[in-house]
Image (cartoon, rainbow, N blue to C red):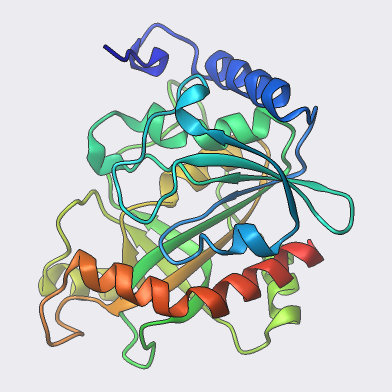
Length: 274
């Protein structure tokens, strides 16, 4: 039976992340990674475009990681040599909060990336769009978030400033690649159910532009680790009540596949400029 060390409440999650980073260094032959990317629904092809993959590891071979529960996540860790000589760690094994494993598991990949040396964390996702002019396939830069999970990766009296959480500097670089990119506030809900139309209207009323089930908790952990964060959402559908037809996960997968060539090329260009 698989036992994840992060399930032990007495364990130190940062020590477990450090152990995972050490294993990644050993298995990839790369002592330090500079940039880390978590590739959500629709973004996976970017890993093939940003540089030369020098090692691919099943995530389950690394301490603290488990098999992704969601189709669209590849379940591997890749070490990639970027054209400029930097090293990227691509995380295809995201644990979602709704899986019920606890927030330590949700943010383990981010803490591992930081322990592996990464100073920039790129977080991507598929999301429901609240703005009606955002059609499926639209990439949006995350400018801020609203965390509605009622949870946090921070434990005890740990006070972290979240001003400019999604780096204005990195968003500026992205705008330099594509000046037409819109920005929006991402609202993370607990899931796994989609939001009701009333909940979407609430998210809109409190300043949200995108709704989803990931990213915010990871971003908080990345800030705690001292990383600079770039967030991007792919609008896979309009949110409930904005879109007049029922929502489905298959719709999300199909929208991601259709948009993947364009948004992956965009992300590769952005990463190349970081």
